[in-house]
Image (cartoon, rainbow, N blue to C red; front, side):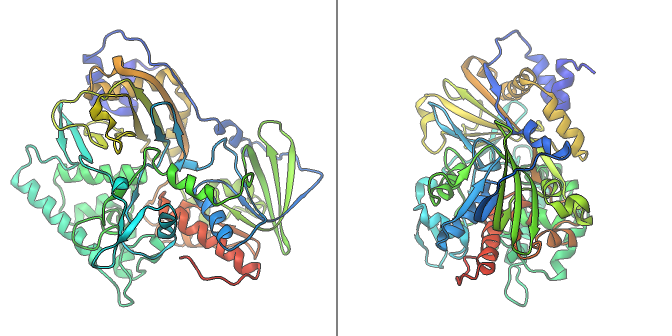
Length: 544
């Protein structure tokens, strides 16, 4: 069914954005650009039945399937242990998965994850990686790490657009009643208490990564409720507070508070602070977002160890190793690898199509995993967008839109204050409960529709932005983020999915942690690599 422009905008961004777009409607030249994702059609070949097998086999000691953050973390760990015969194969033309980045003559920019919360402790693989990057500046008086000043997001860091004006922060204080503010203060106090809570073994109730969190029933019982249900039960009913919590769930988890486990919702506020209401040193970011972390992981690998445009379609585990069948995406040439050890770093729904025993008999737990689609767009401007109210920040959020607003790729360089060109990275999570229908909406819209949607959203806050727009590029992520639905975080499915198949096939992905976060990808990538080292008989000290 053909939708009118207003209906299309309302369907994707909400009625408030549609009404604003119609009020401001006037002829304009479309912004030149393109949809740039390429892997969708090739990846969907996995659903089409048997694919050809190769006649010859390439031997390799360790094969890593997937060059996202988890796969590259596994390769980084194996290189750190001195292994030489490690190969990574990747379907896409660029490594990094949803942490990948792009670059033009103006700036580098993210195509997905765009920051890393500053770790609270000196321990762990993420801190090792940050030290390798030169991002760690020292240790404070309490023994917590400190970070290079230029990497910590500088102020102003956040602002909110509401009814024609920009306001500081993400909690809308303008016009808030005394009851609203009291409820927000009570919510903060509860989150601080959760952050400070520890069990009898000294484990934080909510920790980073999730594997280090307490498994005491006092806390894990929260996983049975949605965040919206928990808020209601606790008497948190202020519309302003509920909007902010819902935004947090959309931002980190790709769905609304009624679709997120209360445990995960509380984790968002509690895990990255020590109970004093401050999130460590803040956030670390680069113009390319977490693409900078991907670049660091890649730097640990010798040239040629990551092969692009390789579609793995079958993994057959055996007692002596795994046979892995693949196609070269460009030529269609069949290839096969015989690996002593394999680390599969795709999501569970892909594993269900690729891992031979699961293709024949799908595990019951696989149905517990649900993935939300996202759209990310990068808009290059000749000059910074003009604003009314609080000035341009790193993170710029629209109160009345289904989008998350945008981040400014040149924020750390302060170039926007010099009036020069910049890049805005715009995010839209598709939060509907029917993820298949949401995915079809994302993939059915062409460049013209996406250009109209992105510009309608931005023009509501920046009426003159169309005249500043130079180029728009759009990336569609059909299965971008695992959703931590009620019951996933502490239910049996997530733990069953973490188990290796035999002694030769191991798994790593953010969905094993229940959250699409770099810390989870890195943890499971390193964990899988250390299982490989154990099976190969190497002695090592764990990085976890």
